[in-house]
Length: 80
Image 1 (cartoon, helix red, strand yellow):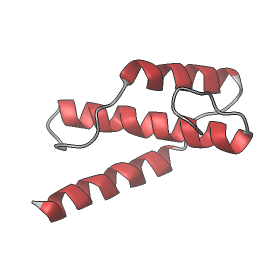
Image 2 (cartoon, rainbow, N blue to C red; image 1 turned 30 degrees about the horizontal axis):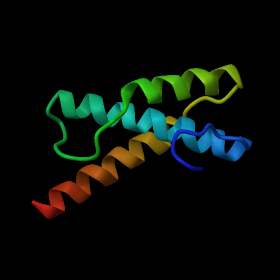
Image 3 (cartoon, one colour; image 1 turned 90 degrees about the vertical axis):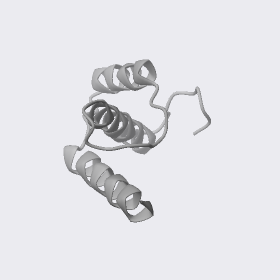
Image 4 (cartoon, rainbow, N blue to C red; image 1 turned 135 degrees about the horizontal axis):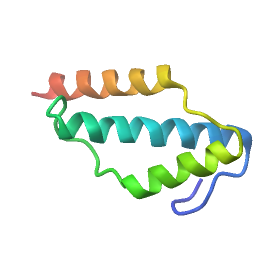
């Protein structure tokens, strides 16, 4: 899915909602000092994707988000 476009298929919507949720968790964890580094999170875009996804019946899979954060943190610590 190209940047700036909205998902079209149910699979794309679920992936986008999961990704947006994980990015918001990452951003929050960074703000609290629990993780360092990582990509810049476009919070407004994530919130928008979550709202549009929810309107279509898509909710984030929290397990996938937690797995993403754990993997990101482990990778970051391995590089240090």
